[in-house]
Length: 183
Figure 1 (cartoon, rainbow, N blue to C red):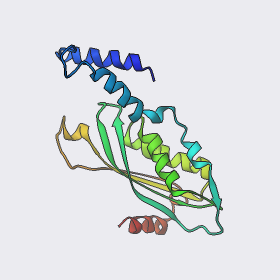
Figure 2: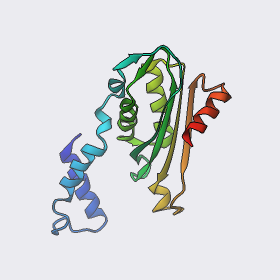
Figure 3: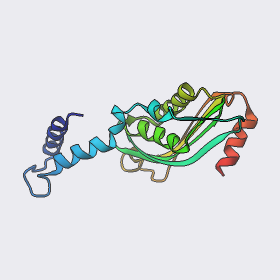
Figure 4: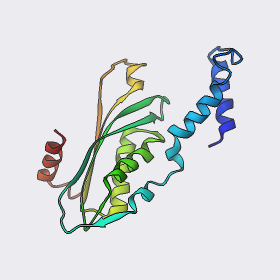
């Protein structure tokens, strides 16, 4: 990330909305924003597959579900936050990954400019590629500030996206089990 370019961009933005970038409260804002961006967009430089490399052998194919993984991301259309919960299930194919690694995978993709639909697919694709499970299902529920603070102004509305891969695609019983486990 180019810290100096971000600082200059923030200065230009502040000037563009009519602010005085030399006033006390704003003098350090460009640097604060640049440092914040390094944190909240840190997923741009991370490879999610690194978190999925440490695996453990299992002798069963019972569904693994990690639910209510809190995430924060930024809408690439309006540069406003969206946030919510991710729920991930997979059917192992001889191997499982540590549960924290599922949350880390969500975090890597969430810490980029995103679309919720794209985020959901990226998580499913990473698990499918790295774990080679029999199936993966990812569901994300999120509130988008671009719907809350501007435009239609509907706070509390939730966008839900679901991606199914492998045996989840054609197995209603597995899908029903996923939704029962979320309750």
